[in-house]
Image (cartoon, rainbow, N blue to C red; front, side, top):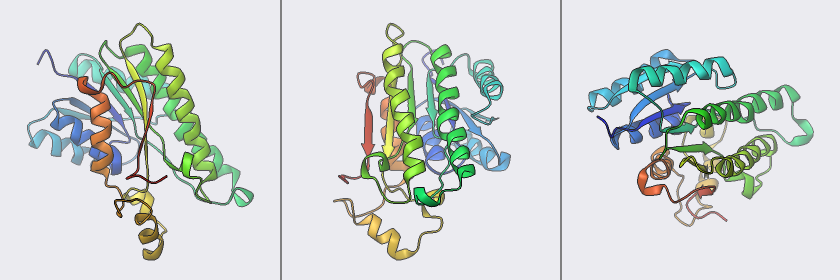
Length: 244
């Protein structure tokens, strides 16, 4: 087990986060499945990993709560001996034209997407072992500028900015920091509130003519988190099937 890498995945109980957790486990990582709300859903991810021969635990934490995040990293170190990979996939989405946005929704986005990612990244920067990797989740909407995504794109633009700064601050540590920016991806959060015509229109935007899957995104994250992807650093990877 001496060469086992340890990954902490926030938002790991569903959607893209779940796919990331199970993919990292399949590649040999021990995984801490971070979750905020549903203990049973997180337990299901742990069961899926352990039944396939991997090692995993679940840890509850509001990513915006620095004490809870520190405790989650403590659990990782206690269970598995350290932390090598940190993936920030916990996120919140609110759609509205900027002119009509409820500022309470903006504050909620800020708390989870910006503060939450910052708190997780800060703890990762303090604890990640040499050879490690930090991967934050952004969105291709930062570049695509879809109407109604203004608040969400703004929050993820902040994620990209902090990621690129962090990569340079980690000089000498042998720890990378990158962001992955999915395009339209078939998750519960993305599909909610969209009719079939809207979903099909978004699927056709990519030259590959489909929505992404959580597994598509997880494979990109897993590469960046692996020794094979270690030379990629301080980058935003737009994993969106070729949407320009």
